[in-house]
Image (tube, rainbow, N blue to C red):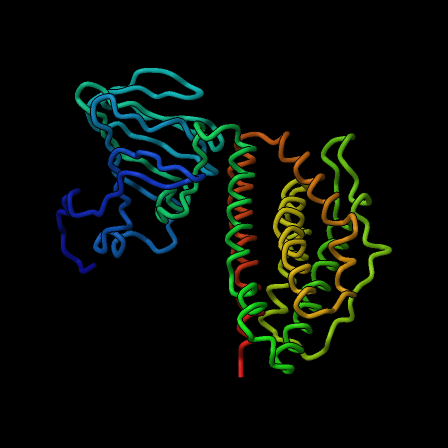
Length: 336
């Protein structure tokens, strides 16, 4: 933006009025993120540590209670209404609602509608409407919401190109078949590295936590790791092992077992059916994956709503890595 004072009308900022999250559509009223305006985005610092949106609810319109992983403030600029959720009180022009991360809150528009500025201390909650960073309370328990999201991403993984190459004739070429087999072995070696890192860095949060030794890989046969692999695939494969040293116990268990473990348990049997390499089957026929999922589910059930908001973000990141990894494997197999 040049060095001129300008007036930017709210109406020129693109708006959204609903968002899909957790398999349902949720009404937002009127929401206009400042960064959706080219002029405002150019004026605001690139590395801003907060985001701003116009928000507005018509009379009796409801933004249902939800939680999110960052703290926010709502500055009421006009009209009236109510805050609902963990706190239920009337709102009027001039009020400022302070919302810590993880607290359930929603709003209802009053007789003269409810208008304000939503200030988020971090990336905007709805900056990417397809990946809203919120959990709506009306979707059942937060555990059910997290489980539903993870299942949806697992189903999406099943529809990816890594499964297509098993049936579209790609692997009829002996060279491409060997490339894919080598990369599959590298993936499994990376899984073992992540499991070992998990065990080495484990810090139980409660005395009755399942031990990672229940998921021991000491007697698990490890496929040989082929040499001269693809550096991009190697980096994606090792991402999970690296996460084991920086996350909390329940977080590392979730991305290891609910993402990496379940992806492998889903893919390997079908790959073995096509490739005929039965030495890969002990990975999924062992108790490693099943005990790992049991460990993760037990921990997830006991987490607070705020923890589940962060867990959904971590699961999204882990599934994005898994998608990139599996797509890379398919692309390498198809390459001439």
